Length: 127
Image (cartoon, rainbow, N blue to C red; front, side, top):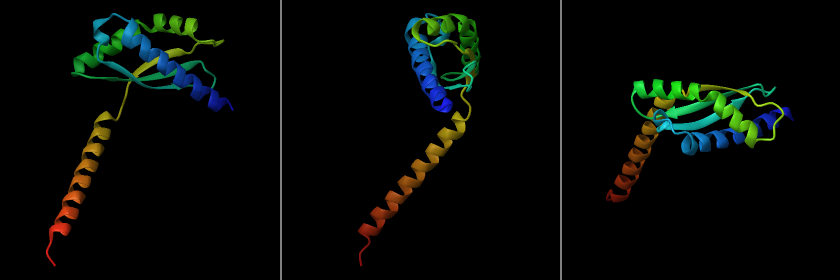
């Protein structure tokens, strides 16, 4: 039962943080930040926030610094918006595995394209 609550809280925090970071924070370093996932510990004391940052490595570093700087503000805003007894500490981390995920997607598209070419070639083949 506690696992379901942690999942619901994670999703709610993700939605609220996405809205706050995207529309309410004015720091220009956060222009390319997207909240992709939030994982809350079962005791609701810590929330690990995965973010995706577009741009060069320097922009990634600056965006994470800006999020760390805004951490207390975001936590206070979550306390105002959510009816939770304890608001978790926010730990921001860049989402890992994006390169691998995009590479897998490219390979799957290539296989699918090759399969379509093979199917078309079989249809056109005279018997």
